[in-house]
Length: 122
Image 1 (cartoon, rainbow, N blue to C red):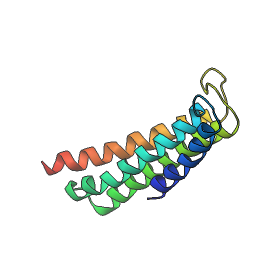
Image 2: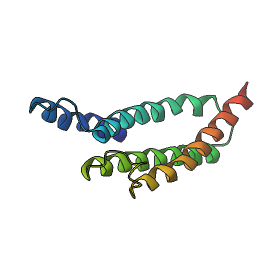
Image 3: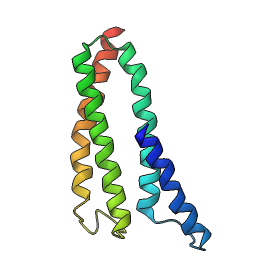
Image 4: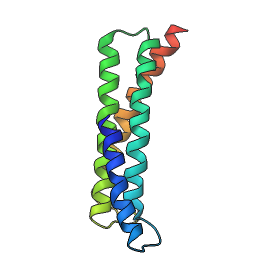
């Protein structure tokens, strides 16, 4: 729910920036807005994966926390990119990009755990 709330709050600066006549909102503000809403929906969807999974509660809890951490890292990365005026995190090789790299592993492992649990249930 925090992801969804943060994503919704990021909509306000988008509206203010556009209302002031900007032709578009900053790239990483939009990225932070969309990715937090998307990750929020994914995290809520994991409730169904956990219900279908036949893994023990410990594995499901680890997987869920890995996905929460990954989601938070992506939100922080995009927010820092926006606030510092980054135009291209890959071209500029900025420090917040490391957060995105750090987010990839827990996301992959967390989803993998849930996939195994759901496939076992079939």
